[in-house]
Amino acid sequence: MDQSPPRPPSFAKRALRTLAVLLLFLVLGPPLGALAFFLSIGLVNLGHGVLPEDLVTIGLFALIYGVPLSYMMGAAPAALAGLAIGLWQGFVGRVALPGAIATGAATGVGLTAYSGTQVWPSSTAEAPELVIAGVLVATCLVPTVLCWLVVRNWRVAPDGSSRG
Image (cartoon, rainbow, N blue to C red):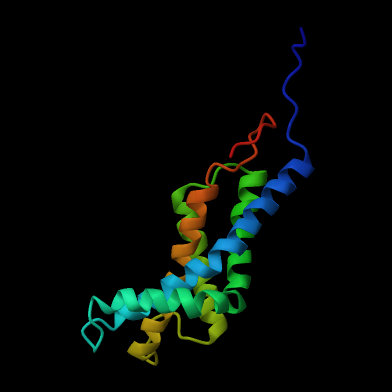
């Protein structure tokens, strides 16, 4: 009987796990982000001409028009979040919920900064710009956490076995 210690996972196994997580984020992230974006805009405008029952219409609008277009705006943030979580799960270990939240929030702040929207409250930032910043952060945070729920056990264990 062989009593040798377990072999560490190969680089290829770790890289494939990273790629699998990245691809899932690329496929699911942008449509989930589109839904989060449109529903966030609807929630922000509740009481300003938007009624609670209008959120269903907004959600359907997002599904019909937002999802197909979501890949143009959302592919890069989804890829960055998926790569970060995939690398961690492939080479370090399981990403916990706080890590997923931090990844989504950082991606959202990055998207907000890239869009030129004022990220931090200041004397020069206007309230609508801060609301847009919050919506953009939510647009990345929500899909990152939802995708993480799918891949949270897709890690390469130290003994070389895969989970997920």
